[in-house]
Length: 368
Ligand code: FAD
Ligand code: GLY
Image (cartoon, helix red, strand yellow):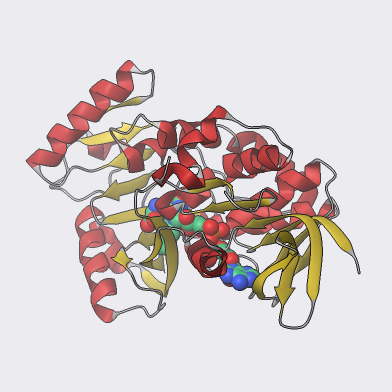
């Protein structure tokens, strides 16, 4: 039987990024995906690299990880294009965050003071319409974050996987892992419906479904699913240059005058139905931010399941019982942003390099 250095369970952006980093280090990798690559959360995401916009006053380990990851995209865009031929749609046009209440304006003021003092490019833009003329008339000032960009999330996820393949990784779609393969108390590979695969190391990167694989192996992850619904429309001309973000709604301008509008956050739900009510509520919010969106052509709606953890921090570390099993999940709203650094740090970990950056995300953090 063919033996691999590393088997990765899950062909979303996290598994694919880890595969890419390992393949760059000449590891023999098998990437197993139960459906199509990037068919779950990673294919549904808006692609914002919103370190500051999503995390605001956060300055802890997750924020530091997000900043490290964000700065990797300009170089990564070239690297992945050269290997896979895929354009990840990296855009560096900044983001505008719109305060909807007085309390939010005060909070943004704090963010600007704190993050500005730490050297981040964040400030009030007092004349929102000089930046984005199509914003709603009621919007006066917005918080401008120059360094938060965006990518095309499904393309980035596929680019990681295809670049890994170009470097020798074997990818198998429609191959569901049913269980870990344990012999004499040691992890030696994985079981699928049709065959077993052997490897020295295994990575669980199965997004919101990671928990299912680990439950029967003595270390339940404290994670839960959060559904996010989105829709997209096609405008006849460019309506926005920067991404516009507010509480409960964001509008991300994509190639070809396409606007992506997201997203709901419905906890403890793994069904992917998109409800009339959710789309209607997003439409109303989007119309307040950008009235001209009402004139655009409908494209489609979809949803994805975000993997969230009880304490809001991802799990990035080795399993406390099986020393050759790594876990990488729980990236919740920021898995696209965090994918680049996650791939690198998990590859380091499998190479025996313990990085201080991962300390807060270890699996046994609740018990030690
Ligand atoms: P997934 O993409 O869900 O991948 C896990 C994969 O594992 C799946 O393909 C699944 O089929 C596979 N799998 C599961 N079980 C098995 C098994 N037993 N055997 C084999 N394969 C298995 N993040 C950002 O940074 N920026 C954004 O703008 C952004 N917008 C978002 C908008 C929406 C609507 C949603 C839903 C999420 C958004 N996110 C965003 C979050 C981001 O999408 C996720 O954090 C990220 O995609 C998680 O990646 P993953 O690889 O862990 O999970
Ligand atoms: N980060 C955007 C979302 O998860 O909807």
